[in-house]
Image 1 (cartoon, rainbow, N blue to C red):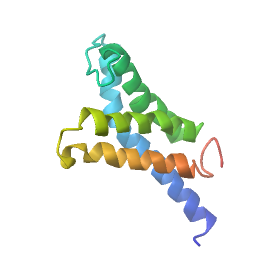
Image 2: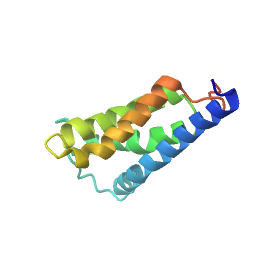
Image 3: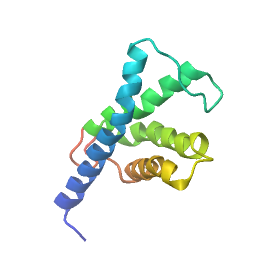
Image 4: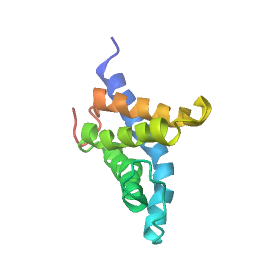
Length: 125
């Protein structure tokens, strides 16, 4: 078994890199909200504005919490749900290559939910 330092560094790398990468999708949505443009897809039938707000939570706000390691497992859940919606609802009829990115993010954030933040986080578990 690998030593504790390697495991904790690996968890920190997984957590920070995954969250930073998903934020590249969340920041434009957040800027869209700030500019007052609330037009957005409605995959769940709740309206465009609520869907945009939920996407911002899953792709911008929660990844910030994941990066710093605060309530990491709980913060990874909305991101995983957002990616499940993207893969299985928004891109359901698209070829695998189109939904692959959402599926990869889904796998990464489910892994974070299972493994937790590691030692190098605010949670320190």
